Image (cartoon, rainbow, N blue to C red):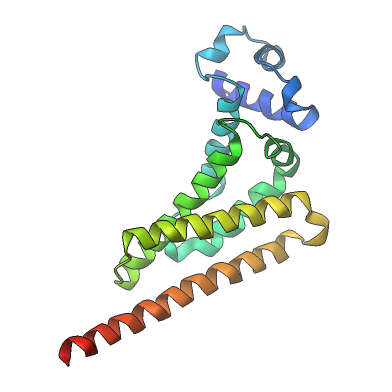
Length: 195
């Protein structure tokens, strides 16, 4: 394990076992058994570590993240990752500070939605207006994040499979609605151009 990975593992271990405001660079480095200065060779602050944990682990857990053809598998892998790390993210998502991990996760979900729709456009040979794609990123990515966050805190109401089915249906409805509308609009544009 590299120094960076040890710092990430120590931080994750601490976040699960104690309030984040009680965790300092000193406590993180005490768990690793390394000197405090080594922390700053890899991270700016403890929030930076949280962002790196998410970025590193979600990339490992979720393959083909922005590929339209594999989005259901991506969704299931992402939900499984969060379910396996539920306590960690319950604690992390409580943080209401600048550079909060919530922003990193939300940005990732928005990017993922944008990549899926861009991939869809290429595969289906449909032009997607940039501003509309940004709108989809904001609304679908934001809704995914809020639903994920709610599920993490209230799992007793919905298990992993059920949450996956709900979110899959929600995204399928958005994708299928877009495909139907886009193809209908293309058809009507062709008829209008002839007249």
